[in-house]
Length: 259
Image: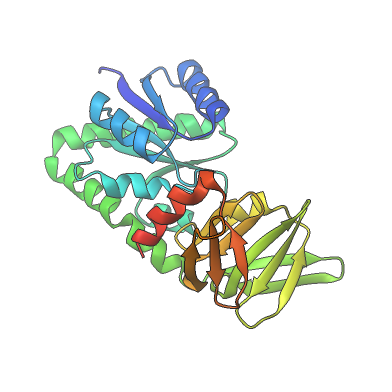
């Protein structure tokens, strides 16, 4: 059997290189033929190289979801191995649909197991085209399943005397304070958590939340206005004005277009 041709999509350079190295050493059945760092370059790379497999980071630090990339492709003539650093609600959907995934940091045994699944699926596609159609349907419906699971998601905030469980949808915005993070809720309450804003960026659903500045994450459900009259700013439902960095403005506009 010919080796499976693979593309790796992750906007962290070292993550792409590390996975490529592990595949080369421990998964000889796979040949890495290309890499990309986001949705736009990933789409171009897939269309150009027509790979058999795409190793796709689910939650890229730039704010772009791997699911957005899949949604942008009308034809998905490849298998996907989803890569994520978090055991969150997305994993439940992947398990339910028997789709391949690996957790970061990549475990060699997990990589070998994923490779075996890829080969088995590839063989089943060759034997019966309906198997491939069923797999592609699973990919098409995946984002809907993810949204269903994330609708009433809860997160736990820890403090010195215990912990507090909150609904993700009730968080209006988050502000960084060095290595701490202030969370502001729709009921007007406020909470200080010991995790960095980067941790929250990775933890929160990027369907609703977006990092608009190195120090700000907002919930798009509570965004009321954007203005560039005095710099780039957004107005939240509680009257708070927050700065949008120039490097994140286009991403915000793209997200709002999808609301």
